[in-house]
Length: 165
Image (cartoon, rainbow, N blue to C red):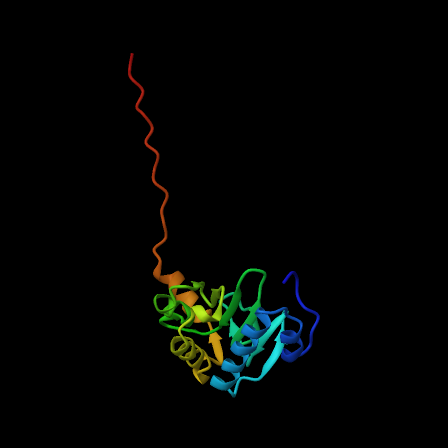
């Protein structure tokens, strides 16, 4: 699909897709709403979002985003699992269990939902939906990481000595 759909509800989003993608997104939507019933589905940034969480970065920037996202792209489907803790991003922890998917920090990209083991996908969704991930405060961890890194010092240039002569 090129560009974002002009839709306002998840049902409109799904209905606007062509087959066979429509059926795949509908099945994934049903799985997400069944697995994570407390996360309210909505449209955000041209995709289906489920639930919300607050984030805060070390820069002071704050905002709100969806906890789980689902998007149909031209050649793949994206499932966003927006959750992290001291162990890292939740989606990245499932990379070895989802070998047919391409995993980014919070994104699982795949050609077909049939490529993903249902039990693993359900486990990923449940973990992402945990109430502990309702707020993501990266401000303290970034500051600690910056303090922990030693500063690099520039190497002194050696100038050759002039020969007397």
